[in-house]
Length: 328
Image 1: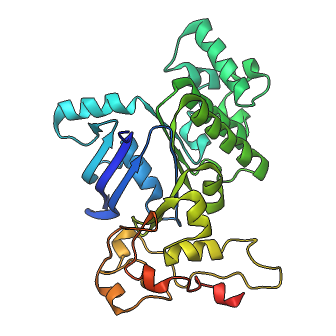
Image 2: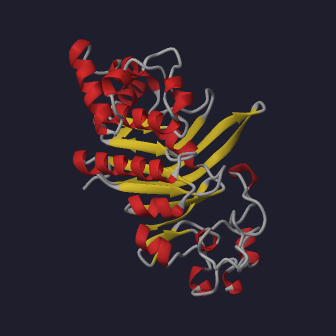
Image 3: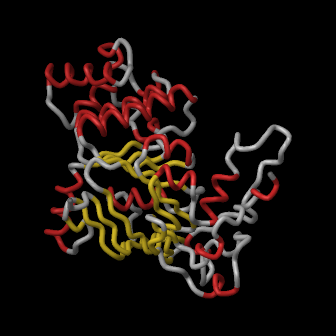
């Protein structure tokens, strides 16, 4: 089966203080039709920029290297014909943003937002009311007449998902869709995305800081650090037998993984952005297993135990403890 989305050596440079700085480096990744892929990592790791590159939502003046293929269409092919083909391909995509309120026009009623790209008139409003009811918003007909400021954050996130459901896209990119929501609403939003995927065969890219949340709703998880992929594996294996020291550190530092009396482990140092990354392994400055070669040569993303990992010492490290594990 051909992948729905293929990123091959994708890099992204954005304008910063009058110069172009690389924020995403050498991303190679496939997504099959109907598959759910979680992308996890700390703030600034390049997760959202990767999604925005697929959607064509980069800052003006940005430069994209490598290849980004959506259903076989090169989204960054040069020329007017290339841009037209990319626009057509992206009509089969939808995006759920982190802050729904920031992406809705405060002057536009919810019903107008939901019907602006679908059927007009009574048929459109009937469909919009039905979709609001489906995503768990009561009194849907009245809600269609409301403005964003009259609805809670959780309701607005449901509105964003409703707009995606109406479009029935082949690919949905959800960028931190549960941030700042309570646990109950978070679970409902995840369930809606999972329903969309299973009923329509929609592929999902789920971006989050929460590795457990990604594991609960995704087939595979990709771990990003400093603008590049460091591990890609099946969700169940990545959370039980992680390969990369960074992934292991993320798992070890989760709240709830220690007794009340034990100190919560942390990964030493601070996260780096792509343009701060050292010449060798980007994680070497924080890795307790780093050796001199790690600081000199950037390792490739290579196959290992059924997954992909960017670590030349993964075999040597073996079952060595992740950061903080020795304090058990």
